[in-house]
Amino acid sequence: MIRLFEQHFVREQKELDGMWSYVREDGAEYTLPVPGCIEQHPELLTYRGKGTYYKKVFIKEKTNVRLEFKGVSHTADVYFDNEFLVHHYNAFTGFSGIVEGVEPGEHEIKVCVDNSFSEASALHVPNDYYTYGGIMRPVVMEQIGNVYIKNVHFTPDKSEGIWNGKIEVEVENVSDKDIPVEVRIELARTEMTEMFHAGARSCGQVTFQVKCENAEEWNTDSPRLYLLHTNLLLDGKIVDDYIDRVGFRTISMTKQRLLINGKPVFLKGFNRHEDYGTIGSAIPLQVMVQDMDLMQETGANAVRTCHYPNDERFLDLCDERGMMVWEENHARGLSLEQMCNPNFDRQCRDCIDEMISQHYNHPAIVIWGILNECDSTSETGREKYKNQYEQIKRLDSSRPTTSATCKHFQDICLDLLDIVSFNMYSGWYQDVPVKDRHEQEMDWIAQTGGAGKPVIVSEFGAAAMYGYRDRGRCKWSEERQADIIRENLEVYREDERITGVFIWQFADCKVTEEEWFFSRARCHNNKGVVDEYRRPKEAFDVVKQLFPQMNGKEK
Ligand code: ADA
Image (tube, rainbow, N blue to C red; front, side):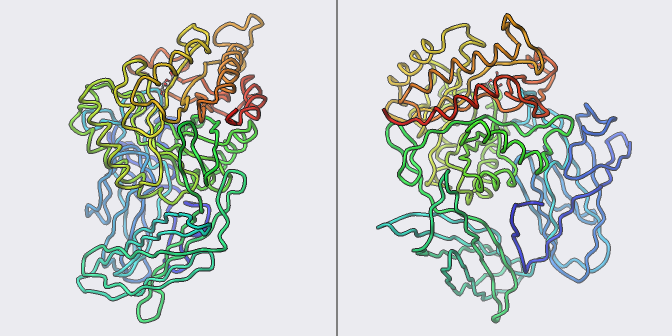
């Protein structure tokens, strides 16, 4: 399953999940499940390097074949019958390629995958999460005609009490001939049609402005969703279709609050890495649902996709459950030197392009984030932050931007974003009272370019080893973690200046052994309120008790 709803009734689509051949660079041969991480195999537990996946596919009749990969970690070179098709860097965004005029019969897909660390990889680096290897998200094979629907974006708005929306349909013509087509959309019982001249070998856009008087809004209590149907007709016959799922909601801000449909919200949630026990980042739907159930059991209404774009099935789940999402591009704790890697700017730009292009329609996504704890203290770093914020605004002016900083008292980028966010570990890394340090931080923010903007405490928490109990409540015990999280939540519960908090973190996750991360016990980041197998620690019940008391009502 690649989405939680059918995306096509007309377009032929086949998911290529199942067993693929895998040949490690040294020639060792395996059969591995896709989606999956290579590390789940006992002989590949710590393998970091190159390997090649192979899959035979059968095509019934002559067609154009479109292959879509939802996530390959971390660099992929795809071949079809040994002809190069597409290259992609970054595990956390999808990519596709089209093979024209494929004859009927058996064909072979080859994917060369590399998860090694080198200068070629500016974003996947040794870090406080693990870069697994493999085809970790679903793969889809589609049959398309010479003209097909490449993408559809929906931007909702409300004027004079009536819901309306802009629908932008991207149509691609992969043939050498101009093709006149009819584009038809249907949303919330509103139907519209436009003629479109699809020029040979080109991509074009058809824009619709729809009024949906009977539409019900999407919000966290009543996350109403609608299927947006788009069809392409040639001589009155539907030749392609594209179904997406959207919600009617608006996002705005006051000085202290994020507003959904004009109503203030208080985001209370978790930072969640895509990582589970021995299967790594190839998270199956079952675990996504279990994570969602556990987070909602605590009263959470938000999740931050630290520190990269997430699997669309999880975002679909957030849409369905009314779980607000802060989604961010792929970057964690990169130094100025790492940000000056010659590949950094392009790899960030591509990640932002793909994240917004692919996830634009999810109503649950209410904030775009960038560059977690990267260098925001130098002019060079600032220029990079500025460029990325501007890129986001060009692609999507409907959502606010932010970036979680840890450059306390030194950050020079708070004027560039819409929402100020900071990570703070009072009680864990700094043995200081949470309240005192929080006031210091808020006082500092009020003197920066972040003054007068909503504020989110984007990370706070402590580590605990699952099952380690200590009556003295010493560090690393479940009791101590619970105490520190309680102290933080009780401070933020009383602060009407903030519009949200995200606990670091939902579940324990694996980290790389290089650099300072080797000091992590078990080579895991152990700050989850559940462990990597989703077994709740004592802190889980503290969150469950206190989240419901945090409504952020302006007093
Ligand atoms: C930082 C970082 C997180 C994690 C956390 C920690 O705030 O953003 O990814 O590394 O620290 O556990 O120390």
